[in-house]
Image 1: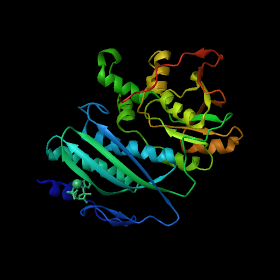
Image 2 (image 1 turned 180 degrees about the horizontal axis):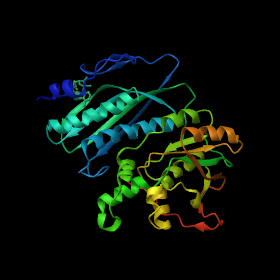
Image 3 (image 1 turned 135 degrees about the vertical axis):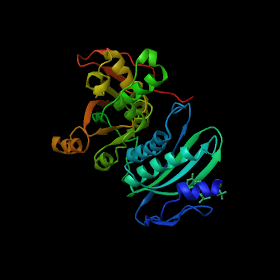
Image 4 (image 1 turned 90 degrees about the horizontal axis):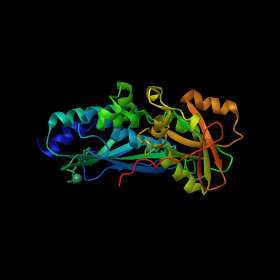
Length: 315
Ligand code: ADP
Ligand code: MG
């Protein structure tokens, strides 16, 4: 099967009207941007052996490559609509492509997204997804904006994805991950519903891809502020509580791949409003924004704790 046939067979979808004027099949796609909206764009590349172990299944690669971009859209408060996909694979393995495409379309359909174009080439395996979404002008969530006194929150739980990755790479040291932990690594749930509720409430927001410390540092840098985080308050994934406490903190603080949101809320936000957010998805207050430009980790006895080396570095 040639490249054109593969695209027609596995990637072309029945046309939806999602403002798509020209979809897959021409030299480029054309979409209609509603007059009262702004376009939000993000792109993430997953490279085999760098961002996922080479044995990762095609369905998991498909899911994650789209989910990590959806998480970026969530971090911005945007509503994703359109996808472009650049797929580089070592050979025309039709079975691999079929499984990949099926899962990719399934997740896209879950969020009513249209795949409107892309590229297909031969080479070392890598998947690049670009998402296009919409926001109402001036209603985005940004990394900047947190102010001293704001409370710092994270959604969901932290640490299980990092544990699963370590267990795949060094099973002798870490043991085997449970199915639940592997799902946290391979199938992150983008926090899009929560993110819509954060619009107009949160003063800053970022998604946790490289680890809480590394990502919170971006928020601190952008806002010219610091933070105090109480490590005993971190929402550690129940499944990794079998590990010793220091390891749990280390995974939650520096392990990547959680794709939860870290956001700040004004100190005076009502407990009813916070409870409403909590109804959408569990959120946990982990600390406060401070004026001094440093990140201080403390335990609940107010004792300082050493900062672990920053989160996962790609280079
Ligand atoms: P060109 O050579 O002009 O770049 P291509 O053969 O790469 O054209 O692509 C033909 C059409 O198929 C384009 O509309 C392109 O967006 C789409 N396409 C190519 N690869 C993919 C893919 N992996 N997923 C979705 N659409 C794709
Ligand atoms: Mg092309």
